[in-house]
Length: 221
Length: 228
Picture 1 (cartoon, rainbow over the protein chains, first blue to last red):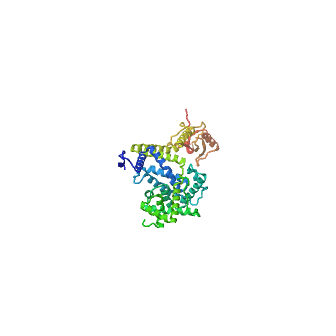
Picture 2 (cartoon, chains in turn brown, yellow; picture 1 turned 135 degrees about the vertical axis):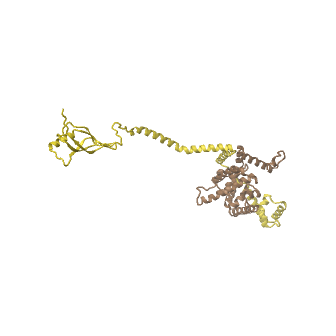
Picture 3 (cartoon, each protein chain N blue to C red; picture 1 turned 120 degrees about the vertical axis):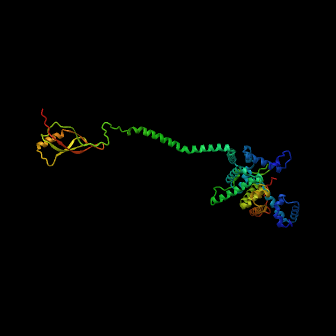
């Protein structure tokens, strides 16, 4: 890996630059450089938090998972071999931690009922999609569509949801998802397909009567 | 795809919308969509769904979480630095050992010091009361055993007769009783004289194992006349 980056004067593709960036970051973490820790947090706290939140549907659980994920990254960065990209490795830890958390919650919180399960809790942490040309009507429609999609994601099987979120929201390739979930590409495709179908059916049942589903934000291209 | 049926086209609709199909498959799907209204409606749905998912709002990371992550990072970095080489590890081990030792002793140090001081204070105050001054003047050796002996004889006479008297002497040297031999008879006057002689004489009490004890002893009293 190092040898490929010795000739710094040669022109690098964006993928190679990203790999070089990852390599420097990992080396910085191994050397206990403060800037490397800060860079890692700045780069991954948002994606990891969003991923955990999508998989767990609870902001406080997502916060706990993010802390666990970063703790594991800091402690195990020395044993990171570089077989996969840094992003894939981080996402794999995040997915595993989220699954562990969900299992723990299933065992320990079975039968518990939250005091307030309304959507307003998550709205506090959410950055609304604001567009300058958006009218109040468009904003309301977009908001409803987002709520509907969020509910649809929550409703589908967590296994399919994980694959779907990684593909459609986090924009990972099939190969990266396969590496994150440690399954074959065929399994990834199958899970994504079933997740999409489950989501489509859920939305179709909710939007019964409409000719086609129109969930596209109207003023955001 | 071999043939572009509704089933196969719908199966690859997401990839088609995402532009992931190769040129041949893309053209085949596009051609099918021109003829199949149902599949075209599905395409609209998929595109709508895909765009909606991609535009879902990102959750903002709570500021407290960012702070916690930086605390964790700082702690882990410090831990990593401490474990860098053997010397640093050794110093760290010594430091942790010292801290552990201090933490271990602290709960005991204050009570132990208080206990020692309290014991010094208490024993210092009351120890004087425990001291007994020995009476060396009247001390007797433990091994000494003696019988009753006459300390000073009374000036009274015993009636010019030889008398064998059995005396009971207490631990203070006082005669508590006296009696003649059973075969000897004496008149009341003689008994009076013997009594005066005995009662006004002083005796040294008997000693057993260093202690003065009551005891009995026979004394033979004889009258001696001296001319001259």
